[in-house]
Image (cartoon, rainbow, N blue to C red; front, side, top):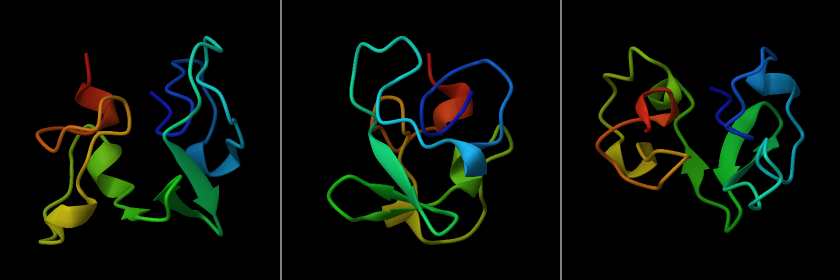
Amino acid sequence: VCAVCLGRHWHLVIDCWATRTWDNKHNTFTERIHKALFTRDGCHICARWQREEGCSNHHNVRHICLGCGQSSHGAQRCS
């Protein structure tokens, strides 16, 4: 799953400039700025947390799912 557009088609998150989700139903929750992920209101998001294996760093404020906004999982585990 792409952490920006939430699409399951293969592409690199670093190359995703989408402003709408893959199905064109919603605005994206994040945007890429210089290879980093930010919420539309400017909060830096942990890209590693979006991966299947997650992130072990202790910066929990950045650990939110880009699909649903919950902190219990990243985009790869969002249902």
